[in-house]
Image (tube, rainbow, N blue to C red; front, side, top):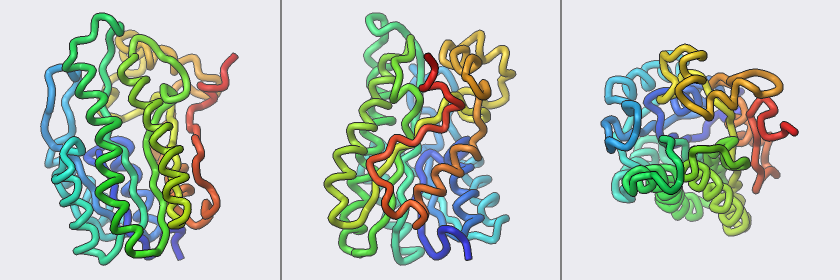
Length: 270
């Protein structure tokens, strides 16, 4: 019996990286999974390409290789209509929705007073508004089903500390903590738990994919900071997925309103 056997999970930003890892890990433990991604670039203000349709399909195949069931829906989390279609697909295909992982996120860098407005807008819209859209699409049906559930928002070590020069990213990830805390209280009467996970630098994600650690640290200040973590310079996507699995499972049935760090000690440094 898997730890999330019989449950249905929706995971955004799942074409690669943490989202893909979460999909595979939950499927290994018995969940049926709906994965989404935007599958095209959305702004010249982002310094790296986003996931593709081919990568999202690869996620589907990796989930199915575990013996699990998986459906992919191309969706931009900035659009309530598109993410609602993904939620509807989960219920249509699998009959329910128990776990929501609002994982889609983007980042760029720049000093606060020099950021182009587009750079601010795209990071806030994807990271914060996108999570809100995902939740507001999913919650009404979860309440109606009256079966409880778990919502997990992917924040960051930057959702606890004030990393520079990433003020827009830091603001979005701190905003997710506020969103989580408010939702945890609003949804507690419905037995729907809400938590955040806070990774440090993660290997094999969009901005780090295929880039040697030394080059990444030289190019991106946040990853240079990660290199000084007490336990390890980076964590792997599966390390974050194991935390997500716990929060999604009934093992965490009384865990809500938690900021769960998977940061190799980054946020505990003196």
